[in-house]
Image 1 (tube, helix red, strand yellow):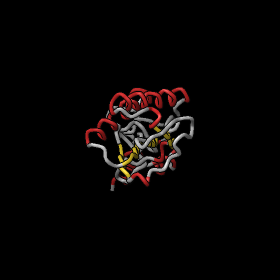
Image 2 (tube, rainbow, N blue to C red; image 1 turned 180 degrees about the vertical axis):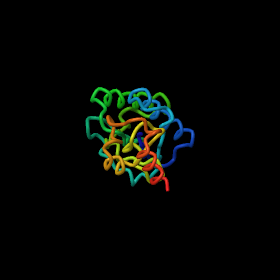
Image 3 (cartoon, rainbow, N blue to C red; image 1 turned 90 degrees about the vertical axis):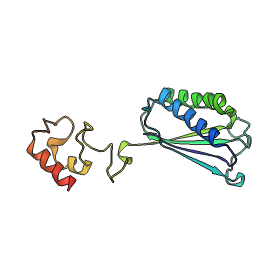
Image 4 (cartoon, rainbow, N blue to C red; image 1 turned 30 degrees about the vertical axis):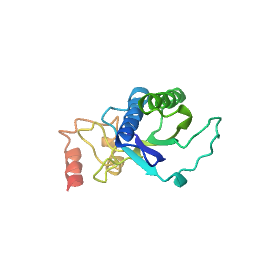
Length: 169
């Protein structure tokens, strides 16, 4: 699950912001193997004085049209995937909303899977698989027979059923 935070100077149209978001998401789907429905974007428009970036750091020529994209995602993608992602985002933003590649600053923040909760206060990825039967990691860690590689038929396993019942109550 990537969480995308896009920061840019105030004054863009809603259509521009939508197309910007769509272009970034399309790159994530195409280059980083992100599921199409896995879209969580925060777009922040700030006053010009609140977006400070050196105009030529890194060998580029930035303008007032700078777009900063911070993507928090699961760790593990290769350097090649990251390079392709950066290039594809810059290309798509130029094509979709006419943002110059020099004005696209991208930062990836990689986290381990247990750092995500999609809701209900549950560490979504830090649970048993498959998705149809998930328990909190703390429960799984205390019961060796529920760990991956030790999983039996959980539907008929009385311990698993009991743990699930206790967790849900």
